[in-house]
Image (cartoon, rainbow, N blue to C red):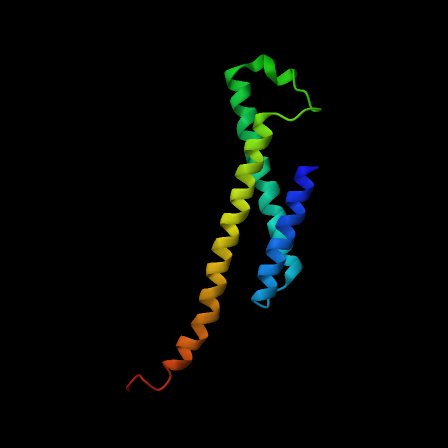
Length: 112
């Protein structure tokens, strides 16, 4: 249930960023969902690989009905990844917005 709330929040977070910079909202909303799910996949794969190497017998003893500390750590890492990519996109969009104005100001200043 918490994962669904995080996915919904990531979609809204990224689509609002796209709306501020006049980009397609649903493209960036899906990007937010992809970042969250991708980071969850990486965390799960790394943990599964660790458990398979450290103690191979625990691979067959999984309980899918309860939350573990690994779930919470995975959620925190995924939220951090979503926020990190958000900050990178925001900086990139700010540069794109500022770049045309600086180029326009430079017209006529160069000598032939």
